[in-house]
Image 1 (tube, rainbow, N blue to C red):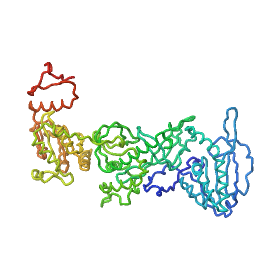
Image 2: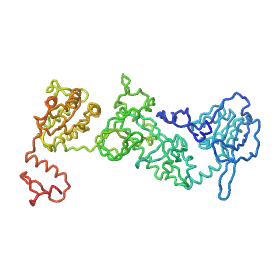
Image 3: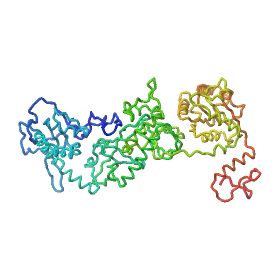
Image 4: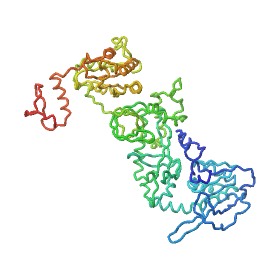
Length: 629
């Protein structure tokens, strides 16, 4: 490690995940952009190196790194046989501005542990902070000595229980160095913690590796397991970067994912709870937070497969270069596997993960990823439930698709709600009952994977395997409601297409077909007039491309148009599995429609707009309902 890296003190380039604590795999890129605090190690063959159980103090006036120093002579000369010292302590003269004067003091900026026995004893302890020591090498620690601060107590404990005559005096000397190092910092942090305050320079002491850090996003609690904390300066702003990990679902299993939390630089002291993130033990209502996060973790376990929900809240669009937030009020499909299929650049860093179960990854015979089975979902869930203490670290968002926005997004788990299906939509649809039943029957029995039902094959000789329902007729007669009511009645998603989606180069119809098959959804192309009207030279390309798509389509699609029968292109009429015509409402049907809508209004007195006989009531008559109110 170079002198310029003195603050990168807690990360190891050769980190090993703590599999003894959790079988979830660590993210493979967790340390890719960070450096370890690592002691520098110098391999040596000198048998006398560090042989003497002494502490050697070395003084230096030109401290590396550009810190302000004086050029006064050191108070003690450096000895010539410093290589025999078990521990070397390097001191530099610092200058600090006091109220009415300038104060100079010698401060430790580097510690070398040269004795192999001492290095070997410290190695298993320092490994907990991702610092890997080689007993055959000199271990060099540099200011601000993060790992030594967090492990000071364990080193003292080792001294207390150790009875080795050679090692014990070495440990005692090393602890003396640590006591000097941290004397002022210990007093300062104890005072700050007691008052529940913190200053920016000392804030790193709040975040030992493996501790739980609390933060929030859009009002939702986040709990992460700390991996490192280091100071950083970007765009001229100082900040404390806390790298932690939370548990995410990849579409195949649960794994530890990296995330960064940032505390912006500040002057003076701040209440710890006002920091952007802080240790969970400082939370006012820690028990309720733990209970809430555990419940959220359990909820995620039930969102592994394809699930249909309602969402009303903020969602995250993972755009480049930075994610965007947007308001979503829509039915959604939770489909993490599908999300990663269409965003492979986000999935790449998750390869070679150790899944929650000891089983092969979900690949088919061609090596392509495939969706997990229901049995795999149950096994994943059971495995996670065996580690209930880790459910609190479950990520606050999960990926899926917004049907109204027609986009892949991240949704906050706590805002995901069950679908409130409209059980009356089908019965309220004003249309010939036998024809309604006919459409419902074929939609209900159409097999999305194997093509049409046997009943449809009897009447669809020469047609593709898809169920194409063409609804034509006057505006406002219930064509769109037919598709919506059937989807509601069967509890199936409804995917809305637009004419511009049918551009053969956009791939959107192919995407909709694939997703509808996976989600067991019904496709609705509403207002297809411009597409299915008798073709002219300008429209041949788009219409022909769509007709070719329909030849290979195996799902269910409703096409609605206001065109009269004779204006519809024969090619579309011939490919329709079912063609229903919606004539203008007769007075009795219009009456039923009005009554249905009026029943939905809140009761505010005796409001009428239709006479008992079904005739329309003029707005200026006493019983009329003003239509513009």
